[in-house]
Image (cartoon, rainbow over all chains, first blue to last red; front, top):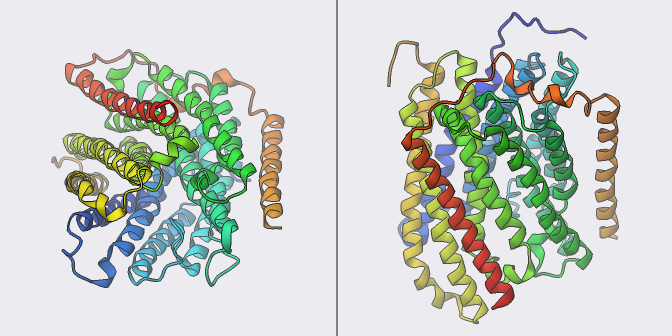
Length: 456
Length: 84
């Protein structure tokens, strides 16, 4: 096995590539979300333009948020910190750049096909079969790159972030391939109840085994590094990692409490969901004790500030999540805007914030230049945070109105006027997030490409 | 029949998980935990904390305010769902 020359500075092309990918698709993803929000307020505004009807806009928005923005943002930092923590270089930057290019091709293909109405109609698994195969291949290539980097490591101990990030890549490959039923090219689905079970095994694990481990892995690097203090307990962090693997994998059926899924599976799902409080608390205790008394250093670095906010929202989402899995609570909160609020807090608030934080933390290290504009980054922080916190408030309220309407046997159309003003506020808040995304794209692009000496 | 395969799938996951865990145990991943704590720090000595500005404090209050508001809403719904 050849060992890389430590004196040669790597190009970090993969990390930069994923960085630009995330920044670009974040704008598109949030724009799609914004259009969808407008359609809730004014359904006839865009007429009947086929590729802009809500059914297609919504699928493009969710797919882009997950695969266009958050995952590449996290992978970007992931491709920097794994080699960095192993005191080596990435196995192959070429292979890495290839994954970035393929990633962008399939993301664009998802937008085009879903806009044309070519969909498999399963939530978050809408992409058609050829795209599914491409996603699986990209994850496989990335896994090769990660595992070979680990094999060439100079540091024998795998720091907890390496565990989380590598696990996320391989588990996502498995979850994606199985959840998308890639052995049935035509429909990408089984039939009947088994399909629902396998779909939500996938749907939940896109968060649980892709976004969560990547985000947690990055937080475990950024917080100690920014506060310049050792991790509170590495053993505890490994306890968290292994318990996440055991508890998180099969809780997807908590999306199916009100349907005839097998009871034993519901029990597994709810038990696992409540049990998730263990790995979550382990992560937070560890991170916050590491950062204890170091708030000044956290706020000094904009990347760490984003990541810290992400960790706070992680606590919220992961207390809300387990409690939502309780059947009595679900009667009020399921199938309405409450869950939409929860999903936004999870994807944008927790993993999206940590994704952006990871990028802002990493960029000065790999470019050798400070962030182009700290002010703009701070501005983006507040736009995203307030937009999202507002979302949580408005959509939670709207969700409870809907939930009660349902519980009282109201017909759907009689509830709609009551949701109208919530939807208006929601669209307004969406504008904050789109603006934040545009600012982020500008700031990140300028950081990578500007010449030293220029100022904002 | 389908659920048989699903159970098989769950257990194969556990099985491979245990294999990786045993590799970790054998290759000494659970040793030297004190040193592992410092791995993220390379070249960065422990630094004294920076002064926390008023604005930083205020920003943190807002962040935790959002958290507490959210948790209170969730707690209320749980109480409502089970006790009222």
